[in-house]
Figure 1 (spheres, rainbow, N blue to C red):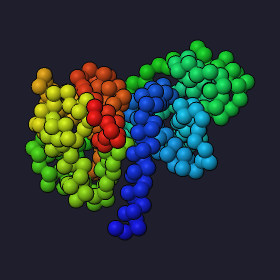
Figure 2 (figure 1 turned 90 degrees about the vertical axis):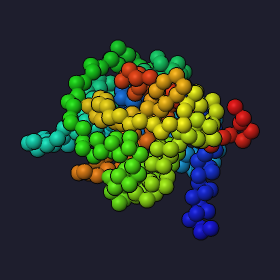
Figure 3 (figure 1 turned 120 degrees about the vertical axis):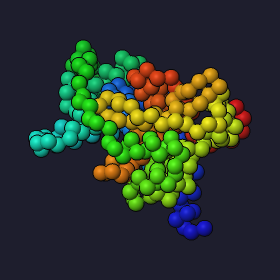
Length: 326
């Protein structure tokens, strides 16, 4: 075993223990990020980034945080406030004539530039009125004083509601159509041929790999054929089997909030349910990044409710806690 392999294994073990410890806080973390960002996609991105930042920060602290909930919200608040400031400071360039509309940028603009509240005001109002934080807890979460929190609440209340922004829909990229066709045909060669040589393939929050060959042996293999392990209860906590059948899932392309995503429909004894979502970045007729949202229960539920499709969730992890026989 090489030194780099030793480090990777140690980091993975520490990461899993961290996620297990903070798992009870993850539903509230997603809800908080959802109120801040106003879209499920951006909320899930912020939640994952906050967990990663908290993991690194925890390793640098002399003592663990006395209030993990307020501390985790503080990490998420700081990330969101920093991003919002950067977006507001960036110069706005006029799009080139004939340039394609980029729905991701529109979502971010709808969630930040149009906002009537400052970042601190919105965070303070959400923490107080939605999560019932005390003034002291809000001050801790936002790295400020109780007096500043009172002022932010006074300014911010009554201004939280924002109009929904109408987003233009662009045609689905041909690479995503090709992805769905290859997936439904169970054609691993066609799937991997769609990837750029340095493409990133990720199971959000738990695993990442790079390149077509890694995808063939790893994430794509699990996406196509992991349903057998799910049905047998060997690849997931038995609580989440929910009558799953060993049939490989079906991919369907859907528009959502001006963007495109792939729904993965899984067969169950009582019908088909969405249990996974895929978002991909395209580069011409190839894919540069594929993100499989499977261990993200709040996010899956949020998106599927917006799309009015039936769904089931899979928990946060594929590993078992020691002594967990549920």
